[in-house]
Length: 62
Image 1 (cartoon, helix red, strand yellow):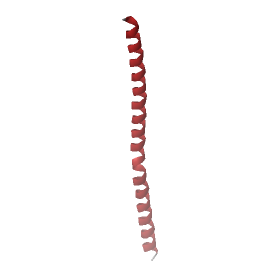
Image 2: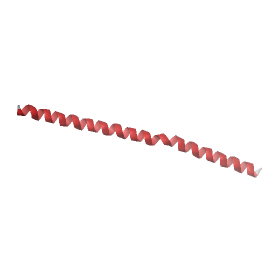
Image 3: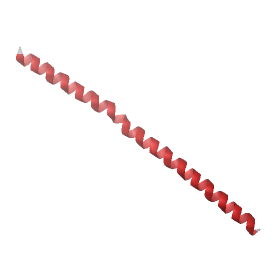
Image 4: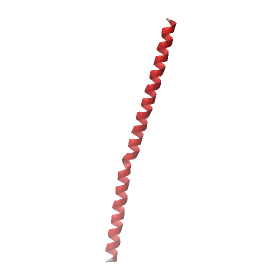
């Protein structure tokens, strides 16, 4: 009877550990997506600022 209880406890702990690993797998991907969106937004702001500056300076030349 003790072997059966030990086997059931071991099985339960194994299933529980695998469930935890699966639930955390998507968090890294979401974090990467959020960082990518943030970087794209920052680059967009910088490009818009540079284009505005260049157009302003070009208008001053002509």
